[in-house]
Image 1: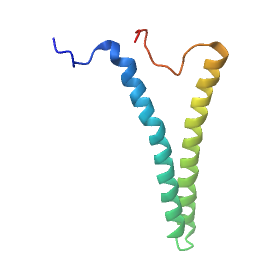
Image 2: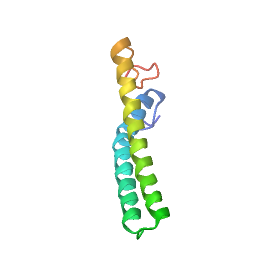
Image 3: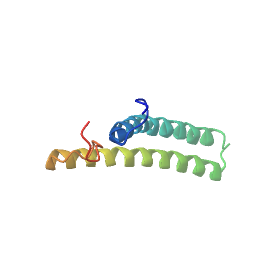
Image 4: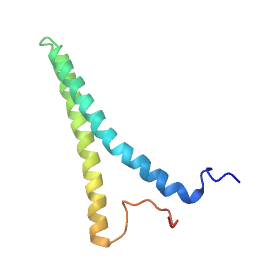
Length: 95
Protein backbone atom coordinates (compact mmCIF):
# COMPACT_ATOMS: atom_id res chain seq x y z
CA UNK A 1 0.00 0.00 0.00
CA UNK A 2 1.34 3.43 -0.94
CA UNK A 3 2.16 5.49 2.15
CA UNK A 4 1.60 8.78 0.26
CA UNK A 5 -2.02 7.96 -0.53
CA UNK A 6 -4.64 10.12 1.14
CA UNK A 7 -6.40 8.54 4.09
CA UNK A 8 -9.75 9.30 5.66
CA UNK A 9 -8.10 10.40 8.91
CA UNK A 10 -6.37 13.19 6.95
CA UNK A 11 -9.73 14.79 6.15
CA UNK A 12 -9.48 17.32 9.03
CA UNK A 13 -6.10 18.50 7.73
CA UNK A 14 -7.57 18.89 4.26
CA UNK A 15 -10.47 21.02 5.51
CA UNK A 16 -8.12 23.04 7.71
CA UNK A 17 -5.95 23.78 4.69
CA UNK A 18 -8.97 24.72 2.57
CA UNK A 19 -10.30 27.00 5.31
CA UNK A 20 -6.95 28.71 5.76
CA UNK A 21 -6.91 29.41 2.01
CA UNK A 22 -10.54 30.57 1.79
CA UNK A 23 -10.34 33.20 4.53
CA UNK A 24 -7.71 35.39 2.77
CA UNK A 25 -9.38 34.67 -0.58
CA UNK A 26 -12.64 36.22 0.67
CA UNK A 27 -10.76 39.39 1.60
CA UNK A 28 -8.99 39.56 -1.76
CA UNK A 29 -12.23 39.06 -3.69
CA UNK A 30 -13.95 41.77 -1.65
CA UNK A 31 -11.04 44.15 -2.30
CA UNK A 32 -11.14 43.45 -6.04
CA UNK A 33 -14.91 43.96 -6.15
CA UNK A 34 -14.56 47.28 -4.31
CA UNK A 35 -12.01 48.33 -6.94
CA UNK A 36 -14.39 47.22 -9.72
CA UNK A 37 -17.20 49.24 -8.15
CA UNK A 38 -14.96 52.28 -7.89
CA UNK A 39 -13.94 51.85 -11.52
CA UNK A 40 -17.62 51.69 -12.52
CA UNK A 41 -18.27 54.93 -10.66
CA UNK A 42 -15.25 56.66 -12.19
CA UNK A 43 -16.13 55.60 -15.73
CA UNK A 44 -19.86 56.29 -15.44
CA UNK A 45 -19.41 59.84 -16.68
CA UNK A 46 -22.24 61.03 -14.47
CA UNK A 47 -24.67 58.42 -15.80
CA UNK A 48 -27.07 57.56 -12.95
CA UNK A 49 -27.19 53.88 -13.97
CA UNK A 50 -23.40 53.64 -13.91
CA UNK A 51 -23.20 55.37 -10.54
CA UNK A 52 -25.88 53.10 -9.12
CA UNK A 53 -24.15 49.99 -10.50
CA UNK A 54 -20.84 51.00 -8.95
CA UNK A 55 -22.42 51.77 -5.60
CA UNK A 56 -24.28 48.46 -5.67
CA UNK A 57 -21.07 46.54 -6.45
CA UNK A 58 -19.24 48.22 -3.56
CA UNK A 59 -22.18 47.67 -1.22
CA UNK A 60 -22.42 43.98 -2.08
CA UNK A 61 -18.66 43.51 -1.66
CA UNK A 62 -18.67 45.18 1.75
CA UNK A 63 -21.81 43.26 2.74
CA UNK A 64 -20.27 39.93 1.71
CA UNK A 65 -17.09 40.66 3.62
CA UNK A 66 -19.08 41.72 6.67
CA UNK A 67 -21.15 38.53 6.46
CA UNK A 68 -18.01 36.38 6.33
CA UNK A 69 -16.45 38.20 9.30
CA UNK A 70 -19.64 38.10 11.36
CA UNK A 71 -20.08 34.39 10.61
CA UNK A 72 -16.56 33.65 11.84
CA UNK A 73 -17.07 35.80 14.94
CA UNK A 74 -20.31 33.96 15.74
CA UNK A 75 -18.45 30.65 15.49
CA UNK A 76 -15.75 31.97 17.82
CA UNK A 77 -18.39 33.21 20.27
CA UNK A 78 -20.11 29.81 20.28
CA UNK A 79 -16.74 28.15 20.83
CA UNK A 80 -15.89 30.45 23.74
CA UNK A 81 -19.30 30.15 25.42
CA UNK A 82 -19.78 26.41 25.07
CA UNK A 83 -16.25 25.09 24.80
CA UNK A 84 -17.28 23.13 21.70
CA UNK A 85 -14.50 23.27 19.07
CA UNK A 86 -16.73 24.53 16.23
CA UNK A 87 -13.82 26.18 14.39
CA UNK A 88 -11.81 22.96 14.32
CA UNK A 89 -12.80 20.39 11.75
CA UNK A 90 -11.83 16.93 12.98
CA UNK A 91 -14.95 14.87 12.15
CA UNK A 92 -14.29 12.56 15.08
CA UNK A 93 -10.80 11.54 13.91
CA UNK A 94 -7.85 11.93 16.24
CA UNK A 95 -4.90 13.46 14.42
